[in-house]
Image (cartoon, rainbow, N blue to C red; front, side, top):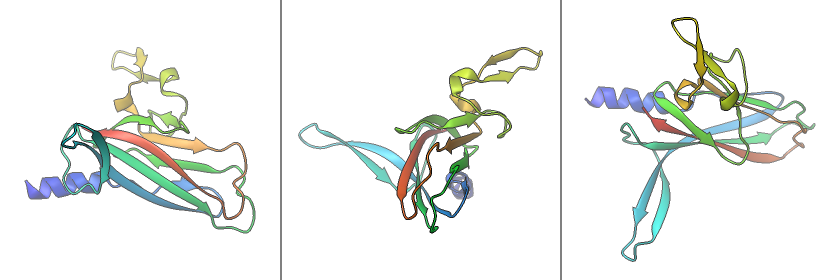
Length: 154
């Protein structure tokens, strides 16, 4: 059981995201826990994922910094979804997603998945294999930012 739990936690670690130009990335993953105090007020806590179980909500945080001396033009970050996690949305900057290992990209509502009988069905969050952000404006030298996406442990 301990080995299986370790392997699950290792599978949740965000894979190395890929970015263009001289952009440095720092990837983190947190378990989102909701606690209620004595007065009944709820607080959302982000904790290191020491133990996770199916149904746990995860928050993936990608911090970026243009470490170059020039603006980073055509800035793109691509991050694979861990196989043990179902995509559950993103923050204020919604990503493009892929449901075929990164071959095609689009909004989830616009993508389809092939069925064994040759038909296609609408893509679902569990089908997402990668998330991608493609910035339309250059990132100034020294500028920083943060991107967030969420998942649920399968």
